[in-house]
Length: 97
Image (cartoon, rainbow, N blue to C red; front, side, top):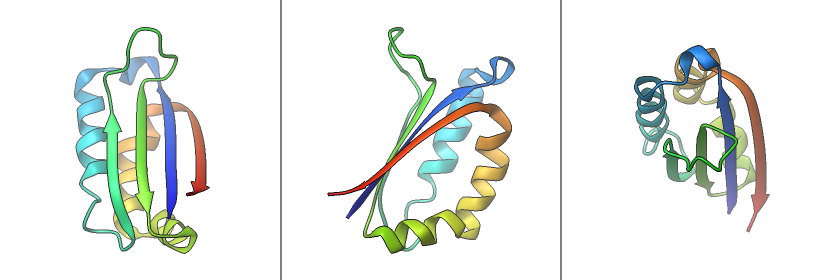
């Protein structure tokens, strides 16, 4: 199994509750649509001590499932319309467990 964790810093003009909720709902909506995606959680309410605005935590069946997720049309649509336009920084870590 693979964990896929992403941290985003939003562009200042898009760092709103409305945008964060839209990102959360869109990303979590991928569960059940992308083969091999087992778990998807998006955190949009970080503590003030945090230095990022949004976190995605997901679990996939395998490294191959992660590759498929990256190019799956439903994921690409969400990434291109609900995530990338609003973000200025992205950090990612993927690892097997």
